[in-house]
Image 1: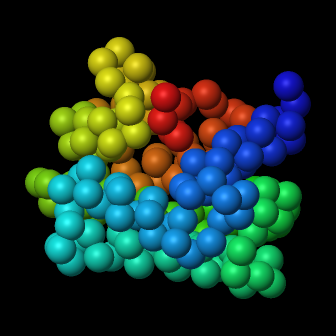
Image 2 (image 1 turned 120 degrees about the vertical axis):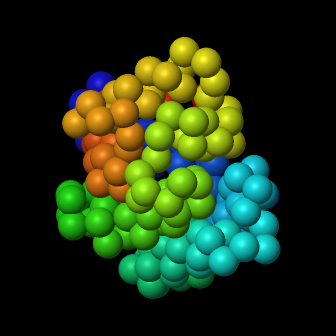
Length: 175
């Protein structure tokens, strides 16, 4: 599978996950459902960090629909706009569109306030997306590119970027 084909396939998988009501389009309510589910699974309901995470998700949605020129994106529109706004812009696209959401997730997970995620903190995220045991340990080890035993926001953004570009197979969308 070529990198472009793998990226499209992963964007299509992301579309299916975000289309929470299964109506064939991604709309604001799908992002709200995704954000609220994550916030709930992480135990952050009603907190400032949970609210910031929800806002980050909705800001990402607004960025994508603005670029798409529609409030509802079907699979083809989503893949095209994600390719245009995120994938084709490389690091800059991931930094501007994806990083704020990842930073908000880090803020929720980072219970000791050091700005990074240790394995225990990351376990909450892995549980939220359905990874456990050896699969979660392998994912953490692959993302910890500097070998510090902690994950920075940069390492997480790079892992998401590399996943969508077909450079790694870390199960970042869940199992």
